[in-house]
Image (cartoon, rainbow, N blue to C red):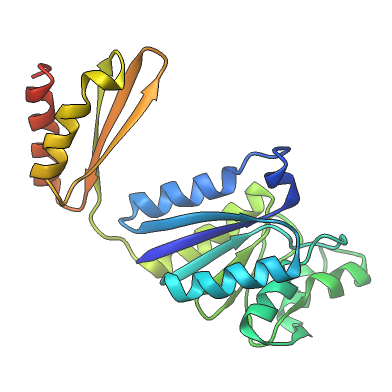
Amino acid sequence: MDFIIISVGNELLCGDTQNTNATYMAKKLTQFGHYVRRVIVVPDDVDEIAMEVSRAREMADFVLVTGGLGVTHDDVTAEGVAKAFRRKLELNDEAVETMRGRVTNEEAIRKMAMLPEGSEVIKNDVGAAPGFIVENVAVMPGVPKEMENIFEKIVPRFGVTNYYEEKVRVEGFEDRIADKLEVVVSEFPDVSVGSYPKPGYIIVKFSGKNKKSVMSAKRRFMELAGLA
């Protein structure tokens, strides 16, 4: 399956908060053999959220949205998703029940339980606002532990396919290996090859669904780079 991740929050756009949620989900999905097509960051704005969700759900098999679920003025993700699907917001009784006994403020409960019509509710075991799913879009809180709690409940639905990766550390800079990488890429089209520069060295990653191809690509590179 292929995915698009949408992160909502002005704090992400101004650099106050690192987007660890997207990193967490992308890593897990990749390890499970899925493909993340893109990661999008949008502000706390209903129209912006609606626009990106509308576009993403047509482009990918599934869309994962985090952030903007809560009781403050800038928690507008549910409204944005509702607009994307042209659905009304309604008080979701199941969402109310997931918060009863843990949240004492009734006004806050009602605010967080206003979800798009027909939403499937996913209980939040470590926080207040529940997650929810509308068709091929899942929405989760932005607090990392809460996101992880709900994501781990959703991700088994997508299944697991073969995925293998191998890494090689090469001392020096990318100019040393650029031509070698081009050869490997052309010879192994079913293997994804990534080059990640670090201070004084490079990490080269080989990944794909076929273990034999991944291992062969790695060996070929090491031969070309004189590392074998």
